[in-house]
Length: 311
Ligand SMILES: [Zn+2]
Image 1 (cartoon, rainbow, N blue to C red):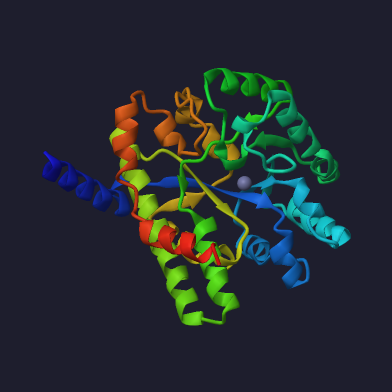
Image 2 (cartoon, helix red, strand yellow):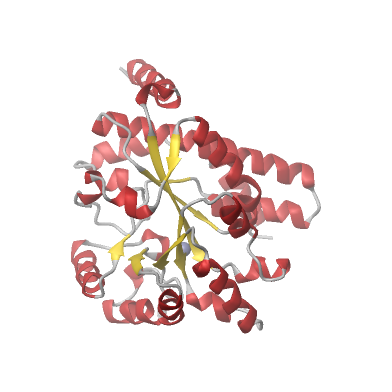
């Protein structure tokens, strides 16, 4: 039985990677904007934003306004956020002010953080005639149980926010930690190895979630990739997207992806962990658990991250 499942998955991955399954669509979403720490080292410009603009890549950003005050250069940080919002390739989303775990907050404290997090973004959105309609939970923590989840859903809806899901992520934050660690040590060989591993694992994750999509829905559902503005994406995201375009992916806006019926399904996962919406839409716990086992194995890098982040 196990062997049969493995073969079936292998065949699906081959089918998914070939053009047999036709056109696929993908929205890129970038969290924790603006990265005021990284960009202060690059004259307060985001290298990733330059790549987005040069290649006209449609992206949605999720802003933490608290990051504007994380260092002394508040004025420059504002200008950095302004550059993001101004870009015609960028759709806007709120990601709270201070990036709390919702499951550890009261609803009122959390909602105050949501509202505090839109102060500057709303002004900028108005200036550039844009909407601020998406919301992404920090850590994708939607609440510890169904009651907490329902409460926040109602409150966000009353502010006209649409909760942004994601379907694919590949722990870019962890690979980025390792990448920056080696770059700082000027160990470029190890940094490149980490960058290449991120590239490979991200593409494997796409193959895996596409195969799950075929199993669950019999077609390629539009995917949403979650990543961050960081050094590893500045150096590798474009290469990843080029390969995905070879695999017949078309980059589209989050608005476009969200029109698909799959995104109108109920999320039946009532725990705090930030898992993919493909798992959240599954009906049974066992089904979810066994599907999660098939993700690319990143344990080797996670162990290294745990070790090096203690230093
Ligand atoms: Zn975040």
